[in-house]
Image (cartoon, rainbow, N blue to C red; front, side):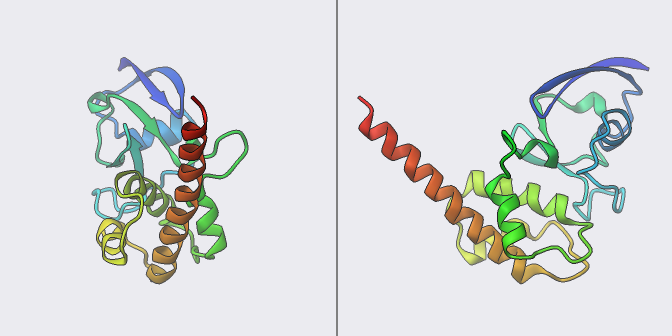
Amino acid sequence: MSAFTLRVNGETHTLDVDPTAPLLYILRNDLGLRGPRFGCGLGQCGACTVLIDGAPVRSCITPTSGVGGEITTLEGLSQDGELHPVQQAWIDEQVPQCGYCQNGQIMTAKALLDRTPNPTDAEVRQGMNSVICRCMTYYRIQAAVKRAAEAMGSVRSAAEQAREVTP
């Protein structure tokens, strides 16, 4: 066991854990975060996806000792009681059926939209193809990503306008 300091969803946690333990286990078992899910345990399905410094990472195969930077989980997307635009788009487009993959889908979509604020349909399909949805809601996922991009663009536009007005 070793002491590790992790920054998760804006909070700092110092934990005494096995350095080889997968980050997923620490997030779920030690910190009580239920967004990231155990799916395949091989880093292939994407249910365990979290963001580390904005990049999607498979937490089921990432040893705790290899983690540096800010970790964001599904629980960390909401701010001040407001859903993130990606989360709201998921609700508006009624994406989930079984819901199991949704953590990975939402976190991957967030990373995609941070990199590519106005993606084409092809960019959405390419950017989201690493997370498996067994219910086959891929068309709803694509619609939700496009809706979130539009909502995030509106927020960006308002912020940009405010900066232009402020001297």
